[in-house]
Image (cartoon, rainbow, N blue to C red; front, side, top):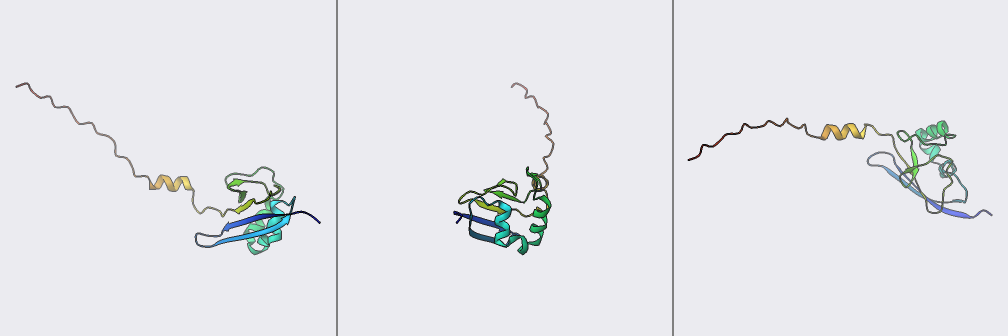
Length: 121
């Protein structure tokens, strides 16, 4: 019998809905295998479609990658370790950099005041 290890799954589907699961999986399982075994590829169809599209990609694309271990993006073939937390990231609705820039107040140009010389008394 294969040795079993514990892994955690986390997915914030939207701002108010989070999904968590704790699984016992066979040692040597990949992220893809854990997600499939947990039923998340069927339950979250957009995740399943994305996983099928990028299943053979070895190097995560940092901008659009949707899975990782403890906030470190990993390929779906990554072999999970005991107590790893598999995180599923939702696509962003807006670019964080653009949002940050839009919140920054516009600086007014600095206008230098003319010096007024005081006359000696």
